[in-house]
Image (cartoon, rainbow, N blue to C red; front, side, top):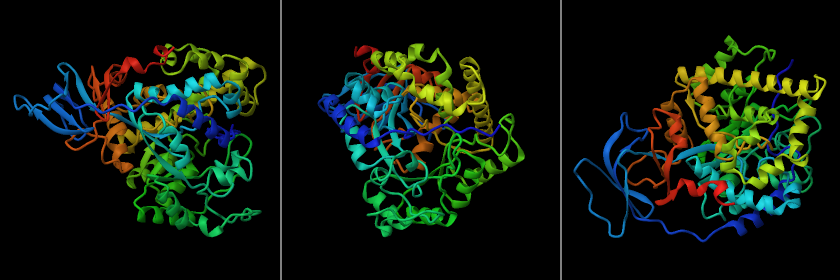
Length: 513
């Protein structure tokens, strides 16, 4: 059986309609902006990835949203008038987490038409999603496919993680443009690359000069993006003939992006795609390696797969495993997913109940039809789906283990939501990804670094990722050491965002109902 690939969050959806609904919902949901606090955290143990060991008995002072002093022992800083005091004894202070691969336009599992039909459910979801990322400690997000207009709506939420975006540079009519109707796709994904292929032509009204690699990078940079994302994807299910970029085109894109001080990410989850990414010289591969040039029954690393991973390591490329992409699809066939008590903490009850309805099961039904057609009978097809996605997960975990053991530059990213699946819930998806990474062989210390300093360095986020004087005060006050156990991320005492202290319990979805 040929390897099966999961679907993309844009598949079959009208992004323009989502944008309009998102605009209304975000504006309605946005509370008044809060004033940052002056803050003093006393006698805390600092766990920061630039330090080889914990910094014990420390006092951290925050003023005007930034860390202004760090002292240890009896060397206490001067008091700041009116500062809030937090007793850090027995607690650990860590940098806020960074998820370097999210998509914020759509509600997981809902189409724009469904949002329009259920405005109260959609509004509750839109209000909760930023809070759910914060609930699991994510104070910085990178939306890998966005525009200034989409970001403006997200930023209407005053309580939200800091968020940056990539400009998406797909090849004309390739992935993920192919999931939008013409000519809408040319408006909604404006930074596409013109590439000649059989049957291709410049769309009516399109200025070809604006779609060279150099012009695309200039436009992405001018839009305020922090990165460029491009794609190597032949397609999904029975369609494997999508246009692909030429190596010369992506190399030119990389040169232009580097001249503009922008990193380049590439969607690539297959052996062919990751070989192409290495040859093109991109900075970050967005996805683990789960589609191999082997029958699906082969889940143990082959010499050919190891060679690709060795090349990624040698090039010091960033590499996002995104194992939850696959588990988010497998979860469609797990009846227990919607009963998980953690889901109720990050999604409104009204949305979870809607997922249980026949309408809410639309993506399960679509996946059932398009990805597991060989089996007969509902129960048999569900089991086949679990086996397919389970095999792909095992492959990705094997690749993660190899990267972790051989010095790979692993970045923490979840691709939330990877598809319109309710099994990729915001915030919770990151918690589950950490467990997947741990099961694959990454240590808590490696996961901690991947979600803080490695992400920050790879994406040029100089103000976050570590605890140091001058850094933005996006911090987590934890009851356990995150470099020793990932369970620390579900035992957060307080989230500190721009110096503002947020009691974690107030962010729960089931507290707002």
